[in-house]
Image 1 (cartoon, rainbow, N blue to C red):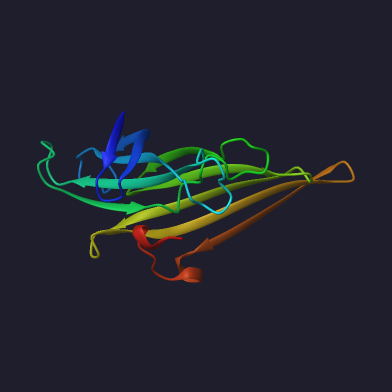
Image 2: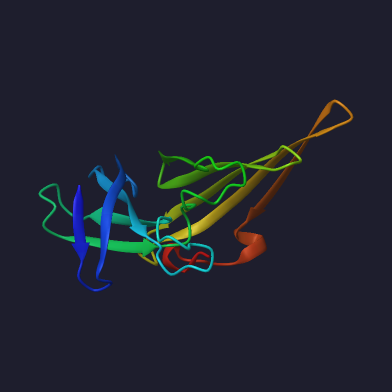
Length: 167
């Protein structure tokens, strides 16, 4: 689906859509990931690079007449953000009262594989999605052996960060 964002005056393409109950109200909500040409970025000489924007929409009724939405242009990796030239974005998983963005990239020439899972939970009092946990799993090879390291940060480490403010 192609549409124009009149505010940014950039063509946008709907890349992925995820549907599920994000806040346990038994009403299906949506997460849209749109692609926008990143022309003008520091490393994009021909204007072919693609950036991604995630929008979360909570519906207040089943007819989708009332809704609240949040947008973040930093959470979904761009299509060129991995040294191995593969798209690092893998999926969004919707779970109880929240969702996770999952990306996997490989650093060259070391071959280190990094899986990052960024999880947000709905906070009813704030009527917002708050960063809940960031898990970074690293897998590397040393002398023929696989080394795994997992780094987990929680709200205790980074404080309260709303979805729109995550960078």
